[in-house]
Image (cartoon, rainbow, N blue to C red; front, side, top):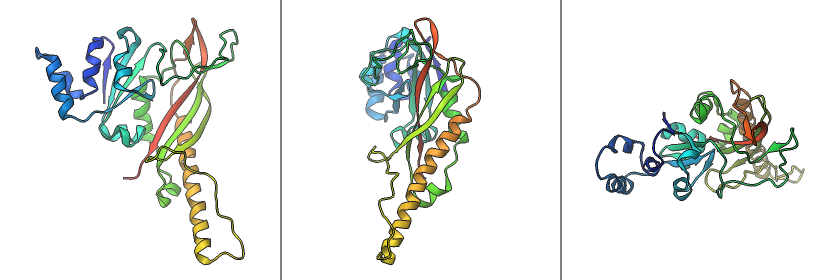
Length: 258
């Protein structure tokens, strides 16, 4: 796991997308030709900006003054956090101000005059102590795969939403849904089979398996909430218009069976 500070020139950003190893080669005179060679031969890691996957175009549109720091997760750790899309690692970019991209949503009801309002979009995002690299490192080391999910082979990406308060604590931790790792669709948490005296043994078995599958999905959500609630330390709160504000935060946690 490496951490790159914003003192790097913004022009280096497009090369780190191709391979972390490219940084060691930047002393060569023909940087553009080198980057194209690396891009053609090396698979690209997943790029994440402020917790959301980003395209190359979105990353290249970032200005130097917007970038706070860049972190890199190696393949195994990256997959545990972001799922199969990060099999080649992940480049994590944290900005120091909110900018307009296709990944962001606006909240027309957000009014700075209301002190207890929970913001979706702010000028400065909340940050975990040590940055996103420290956050993901804690998740990787402390997540436990629930037995109920293992038994049924249930895996997926859990979306955990919470609020970072103005004092740096978190509240309202809620695992909203589990996304199928292959399709990206939410996994059902409804038992579609109902027992009756007319059911065959095979139908009874299928109903029992469906109940266990649902239990596995719920177990993934419960474990995700547990590990997020156990995060140590206080966040740096989000800021908007010169003051600390309450901010919504979404954290994806992936569970994948080896």
